[in-house]
Length: 218
Image (tube, rainbow, N blue to C red):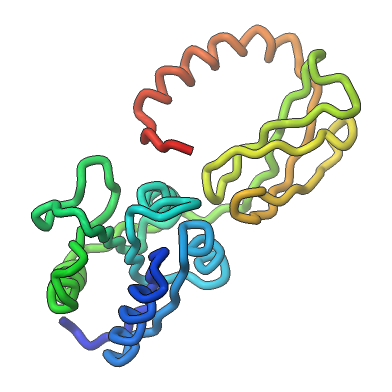
């Protein structure tokens, strides 16, 4: 394996595992950060990007399955390694969007071989950078009360949470995701007749798209 230093993010709910792995990689000259679950990992990447993500699959809060999917969507240039105590014969589990799989208990040498192999592969090009646009959430006649709330999809962790309307019109508001803490700007707009007309078509198309989405269990 090339001795080029890497920024490595290790995610595992076991303190002993993430600490021992961190010690080994630091002794090899790599820069290492650790996180106890997927939400903590997203906060780490929000502060500073990483080169390699090594994550356990089974964790409370946000699992490694979900975290890997978020990374593939938002950070495609980051190489990802899934790890688990379950055997997969060295292959990535079906449905897990990772570049490689490491079975716990194989020893650090096996993980080094995986990283050496990934170093020889071409990394995905990052998505073009663009400004984050505020979300526009439509307010229908059914949501006219003062205590009504809106379901807001978080672009960071891809989960949904509720927030109060807190006003009328196109005034820009801000809320923090209840799951990962990401700050989201949104505006409540009045639902138009044209939108009402298109709503059923959108729901039908959304149903088709949802069949291709990963089956996360919250």
